[in-house]
Length: 259
Image (cartoon, rainbow, N blue to C red; front, side, top):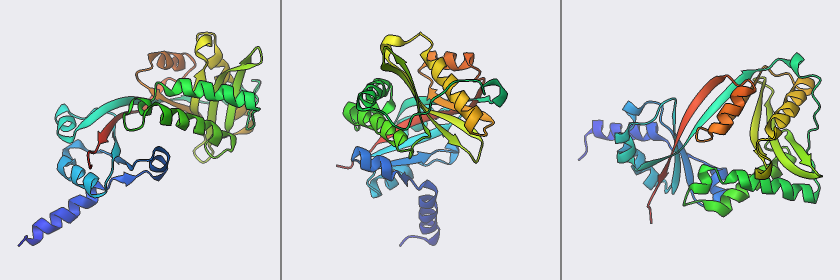
């Protein structure tokens, strides 16, 4: 018969783990997906983590660690794979610097324009951790990025999007959203047609975003998140004033063999 302390410890530690089910991701990708944040590696119990993953029948779990990587020992014992390192950068926003900027926020696109935005979104998707995840893969990841375009147009994901055209074809897109409560403007997704990289399209898109926020919103900072693997993006954002690293997020995937 189990001692009372053993039963208490089991219940107590089960409550500590508490893997969150991501309903939207699970429905969209067709597998049961969870999320877990390791705040203190010392207190993390990989055995109980795996027990809960099995009990709740999670197939894939995103495991996040902020500011520093997990130890190699924890990664091995928990069967985790480091799939990305995301950097959140910010810059202070001075409205007076951008009130003269031209911009046109779009929440509607013609059918040809939508196809061109989809193409750029699918191109961006190739760098995503979802694209490289065997349990999700290419087709579902491309569908996800196209869904973000759709949800931007219906304003459930973002305020809207900015575009840059050349010869009447869209060559750059920028999905932006505003956190009015915290007075922060976010770039949700930005991408340029691969044939037009290095021509200042990204800067043009940001200038439109700044103009929109300066004239239509009251924000105090702008933030953008991107993969550390994209050194080109890091250097670009430094050049346009994103000089503060707000957060570094190490992202691991746990694949659960419950079959």
